[in-house]
Every structure is written in C-alpha cells, then in structure tokens.
Length: 273
Image (cartoon, rainbow, N blue to C red; front, side):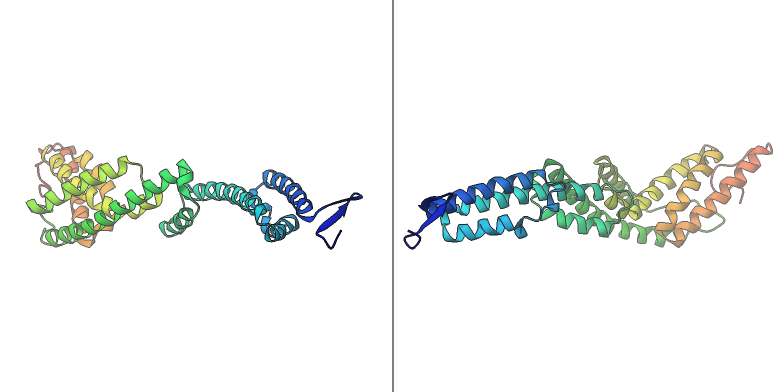
C-alpha cells in the first residue's frame, strides 16, 4: 500500500494526498495562532519556523495547498507592516528629528503600503505638499535675501531706515502670504525647520515696514521689542541685514532715551543718531 501512495497513520491506511492535506491544515491552524499571538508581530520569524518550512514543502508536492502558504504569508506580512508603520510614524513625531533622518524614514514608510493606513497616507500627503512648498519658497527666499543684502548695503549708519524698492517689497509680501498659508497647514516639523531661512526673510520684510510705522509714531519701546526679535532672524538673511537691524536698535534706544528726558523726540530712525 505504501508503494501505491498510501500512508499508515493511527493504524489506518490513507491516501498520501489526504494525509498531506490534513497535516497542512493542522500546521496552518498552529501557525495562525503563532502569528496572532506574536507581540510584536515581527518577533515571530515565520519564514524560518519549522512548521512553515514543512507547510511550504507540502505545497510543493501538492499545488492545491499553495493558497494556505500565501494566505499565511500575507497575514503575517500585513501585521508586521502595521507594526512598522506605527513605529515610523512615532519616529516622525519626534520634535528633535532632522529633515535628513525624516526623509529616510519617509522613504521606508513608502515601502510599507501606506495607502492601507489612513494615518500613514495622510502624513505622506502632508510631507509631499510641504516639501514642494519648501523647495519653491526656498529658491524664492534666496533671491529675495540677495536683493535685501544688495539694497541694504547702501543704507548709511546715520540714517538706517531702509527704503526698499517696490519690486523687492512686493516679492517679500508675496512670499510672506505664501508662508502664512504654509504654516497654517501644520507641515511636518522637519520641513518647517528647513523653512527657517525663508521665514526669516519674510520676518525681515514685514518687520522693516512695522518698524518704520513705529518710529513714525514715536513708539520706540515697541520698536525695540520688534527689533530684538528681528535680530535673530536677520542673521539668517545676511550681514547687511544684520547691520541695519543693529543700527535701528541703536536708533530706537537713543530716541527712547531722548523722549524719556523730556525731549520732543523726532520721528524717523535717524532722529537721535
């Protein structure tokens, strides 16, 4: 009977195919339990588990068992993907992560069928949109920073109020509006960090206009506060921008001191210089 393709089990001769099918189903039940109970999912190494190896061998002799193998593998892979996606999203939420590290994590996330997970899909959509904005706005910011540095180089120390060209003012205003929208979308933190120079250029453009209005209104204390905040942004733009902000700070301080001594004070950054 053995030579005719039968196997004796529990004292009974049965067809070899029937025996293999029964064993395969038993192994499948055991493996499903192993997969379900594994915590974390990848702590169970399916492909080297003896039961899985045996099941694969059975399927090679009986192709009708291949769906059992593929089903187990798909279930296991999906569970591992869910775990890995969760871990990667947690890493991306770390406020200290660099943009380079985040880009590497995002690349890995793309390989884990993110479309199957709403949170992963939403993050990648946000990342892609923010990355496109950062690239285009950074190029524009570099051009505007060059323009600022060029025009501010002509601003004298004894009259530091910057008179920017209309084209430069318009460019700064347009970029600032774009970045307001960008920040409102709550972009991924690493990409927001990459936009710091762009945001600094915007801050300088807006800050110079506000500062001029404050000087005209003899609001020197408010001008000092504004310029104090602006000084750290100016460093990101360039040395001429930094110089002019420093001169404006001196002018605001002197004007405030003059006003405090009972003087009339003059409007304009050069009043007490």
